[in-house]
Image (cartoon, rainbow over the protein chains, first blue to last red):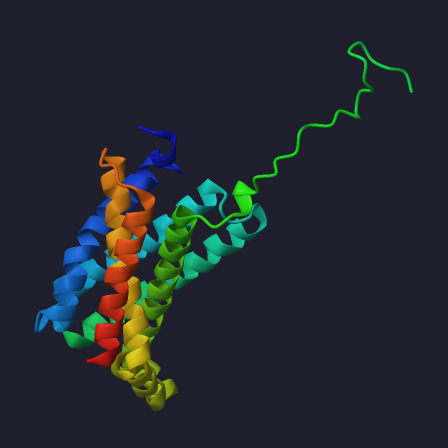
Length: 99
Length: 133
């Protein structure tokens, strides 16, 4: 593998981000374009989980790449974990209200 | 100051200057990376606001805090053409550029300039289409 395409960060995080990206594409298409899928609990739950996993993995990898400064890495990690938890908590609350 | 073994003073070695300024110049690859990162940030912000808006609309405990927040969030996010255009641009660009990165990791090679330009054009078409129609 060439140096400029080598996975950065720890390998499992890179793999998790790629898998969540592959899952996200079809789920977003279903959520946006297929009638009735916005209220589907299974699609909604999978979409929420894969979105948050993809987001958190991206920020963890950015920290590992040192493309954001060391000083802000810790702060950004805490912030992104809080945002992820808010999205999961409120999102599953919304899905629960639709079922 | 005494001269060193090679006839010059240690600490006063003058290296040839790099006058090319390549590191500071415009790079299509850097533009692609920046757009990829900012489109991801736009999508993250949209998801957060979208989920919060839906929460304030549908979860009784949140609706009790402020009944208007949900409807105003959703009205702004889902019906303002410019917002829809920016979100669609970000979705299409992030999807296509991410796909290109993944393909490059399994051995597919593509030149930066046409790939970034093509991705930007397709994302712009999607964004303008969504905002205009």
